[in-house]
Image (cartoon, rainbow, N blue to C red):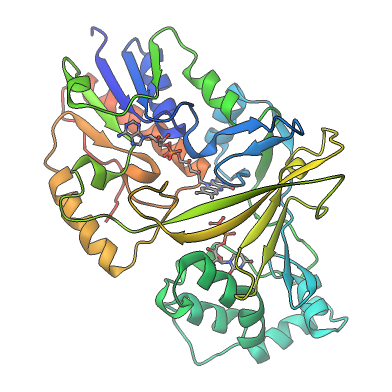
Length: 384
Ligand code: FAD
Ligand code: UDP
């Protein structure tokens, strides 16, 4: 089998992992990205005033239960132990997240045991909601009105620009409620932070003689000439020039500021109240507790509707967007010699570990189709 000519649009984790897998099997891979850097939204760089490693497109913590993904990552990264412990400020008080025994005891000014707290929360929860469908129903069912209003309602309105009664329960299901003092934000087996940020991981993945990377290069039709297969990791609606309209996203604005010494004493401080216009403040030096920095750089994070000029961050996936998505999927499923992948290509919120797992799977499927002369699917996951 001679080496195939592969074009990959997007040098984030998706593009890099697919490219590496195919390059290692002797295929010739060209990866282009319109941005001047690799790593997509996981891009990190040192702040030139403080030398602190900053996650430019928002805070990224690696967490996974997937052994294969963890092993893959560790081939290319030096991971440092890191546990994300998020705090939230509400009504002039700081609480621990995700909601745990400390949060419950602080909030209700009690010293409950785990069993007592369970009984309390059960008494507060709306037992009439049997099968919660919306974010609000999920919250009322599992934590009750007071905790919902303090910690979730205002934050979610700011984050998503709509009432939690309009959002799916799945968004809240990402967060656990614990009846012990475990304040680890994630429940996964592996969690860590790359010693030198995320950018060198992606650079290492891309460091292969069969991979050529071109940055600052927006995809153009002529890029496809002579190409055997194209993997597109940009927005699926952009591939079709938004002919049916734009898929809805939330975008983020970051207000950067400096502080002498420490600012907030932790990496992520959420702000639960709607009247505070930002959702959270990230103090980046706390992502690297093994480093020492006298001063600090922080990002205040504001969420708003994404316009044509903005970077798309969070896919909204409301009913209207899903109808639009289905129209694009109908077109996409007819494509030949191309596949859509990643966060933007499939219009789904994907954590980094899922991104890597899906990219590995897509590369394997492509290699299998070469072995048995079948057609490569346009999608390797169900995106509808
Ligand atoms: P991207 O990183 O978006 O890469 C796609 C690339 O394609 C981009 O670089 C873009 O410039 C390029 N591109 C698009 N169109 C074109 C075109 N026409 N021509 C050329 N290039 C193009 N995950 C976690 O696991 N933990 C976290 O803590 C976490 N925090 C997050 C916080 C925020 C604020 C956000 C938004 C995401 C977070 N994620 C987190 C998810 C993580 O960012 C994604 O899993 C990951 O970036 C997906 O990689 P990707 O390659 O699919 O997409
Ligand atoms: N959320 C909230 N209050 C918080 C943190 C999160 O209401 O203090 C909600 C919010 O709607 C968010 C969702 O829970 O979109 C999932 O939270 P997560 O921290 O996973 O958000 P992400 O990492 O996607 O920003």
